[in-house]
Length: 402
Image 1 (cartoon, rainbow, N blue to C red):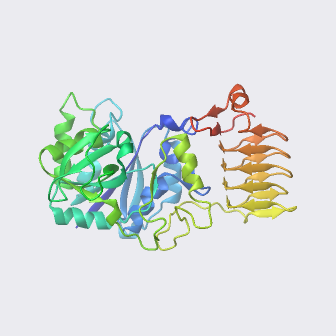
Image 2 (cartoon, one colour):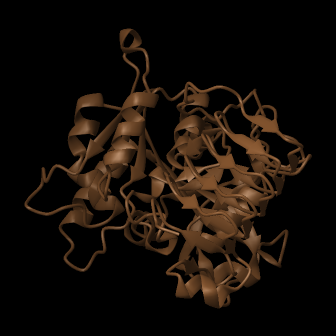
Image 3 (cartoon, helix red, strand yellow):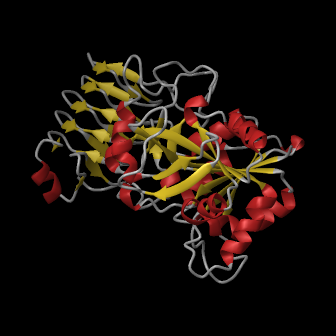
């Protein structure tokens, strides 16, 4: 059974501005050493699916470069991870939606001739054994299998929600952000939300994409158009993420999935990483998250630095400062007397002496002068041109002058 992995990585990520002002959403750094796209790719590679195309479009240079330099597979065995930019193969237009992205890249499918196509989004944080989902898809005989995660019924209006037929497998209805959906039979206060991960039988995907391309009313979206079309024909099945078994996972982080589509959820996902028993465990070496690791010395703590519940990446020096529940990327410098709490600092950020940083995200190459206060007075933060999220997280953009 030949399997081709397709990762949809063309998203603009407007809700993550200003982190996406200069890069595509899947290229946004995460957890100090990774980019968001690394989670989807690691899941596919760990599952044994070693032929993957990453479809890119919006401000894709850093994403294309990251994939090209990081994700090098054995060409001798015919394995690859390759970025595929929008190429206008089907006309003089860029991708019109996630389904159109695959339709315009149909040459990948024609060349590879897969039996199964696994389509994953590129901007979620989670671990998933995709092979188990493929096995469930084959056993069901469906045209498409949609990964579903259980979420509180009160949050249903944030997701595409699936109702399941009496057989417990066939998707009876696909509801887009419903306000009052029925609960699950075995858990009335929960619903099954789409994770944006799909397994298709190749012939079925080609057929439905070609029909969708001819429909002038379609938004050409995987979740909004392609899946509902197959649901209407009774050819769609659901795969409950709670049944997924990832080697090395424990009861605390089993089933973890985070949509980091907003500044607040992105910030919260970082805080999930830093405790002694994290909600999401980066240190599971039986299902590693792969990425490029900079050739830098280990982090250094001098002059009585106090570091509590924090991740500190290579090349960083914390000198006489206090940090708490924070994540620091490579080459971070934090000087004497500074305090950093509940914050995310990206590559090459410098925090001056005596500065106080709280509930902040500071993008690459930012220098914070000595004595600066960030996250203390939000009105002052806004006056200085910083973004403040609805949850009170202060964001300083890449290279922004402080």
